[in-house]
Image 1 (tube, rainbow over the protein chains, first blue to last red):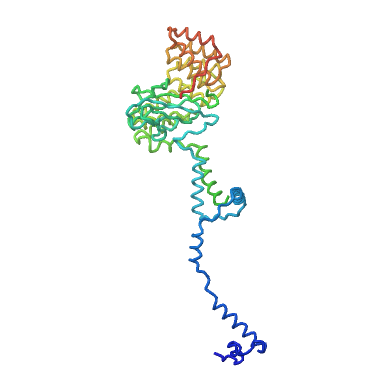
Image 2 (image 1 turned 90 degrees about the horizontal axis):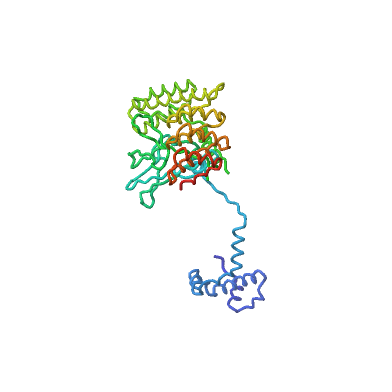
Length: 211
Length: 213
């Protein structure tokens, strides 16, 4: 630690006029004096104190409604560059999901019929049945494709499907095991297996020809 | 759209499109569904139909239907064989009705279906002759509907030929059969011939039935 110049010490002690000091000592005197005054000043308010003060002041003033709407409009309408970073595996999964929705037909859903298609309605009265489905030439006689519904539990099961226009043979399968012709079909054809059982026959009209 | 998404869509969409255009071969559709005991005989019947340029889809459907219904193998094979015989009979009828050209598969399948519904061969042939270039299915089903409701087959064919001559085509011919049946059911007891005469008088303005709700 270098010793302080006696003339500077005398000025700081008030025993000498600082104006009499040489230029370098006068600058040192000024720095020391300013530093002393800063140390004497009270400490700044702490962060916690400022937060508590804000809380005590209550909520900030509400923005003018028009101004808020303009700000919102500006914020929503302002173009922004958005960067989405996806792993390829997620991209492929997303694409597969989209393709499923776009290109595959839900078997139980009803769609808009095309030019050579029409809507077939199926209704059957099967009180107490647990399930009723329609199996026929339009679905390769496959089970589990076209289920009828009885949402209100009144025993009347119904459903509809978009099918190619033309004739289709079918039967109802009740509770997964009982094959029953549609009593409302109006058209029947022997199934050809020698037991005298009949299939129901529906002739689907093209949607353009349906009333 | 990033390239990975485009590539994935192309890879997934293209095979789906191809599947829609080209149904799987019959062997693939039958394998695993038709009992093994019946499969060789059914394959043989379907191959015979293909070799004779007959439509095979009705036979495939009959095999799938019998399998779904758990029909015993011998009856299943007989059912498919009966279908093949009907297709041969149908082709003979179409060839006789429209000589000089190869019988269209659609015509043959529609005639076979009409025969399965019990429509007499001569009535089928007459209806095809009236409109050889039109799909015969609706007229044949309309005639089969009338016969199923106790109308005389020849009288039914007369009515449908007249309806065709007055401009009714396709599914509108089915409306003719529905109108005749309604006349038959009308209170007051019309006879079948009276019902047909009444519908003949209203041609071509037969009502279109309301869609079933």
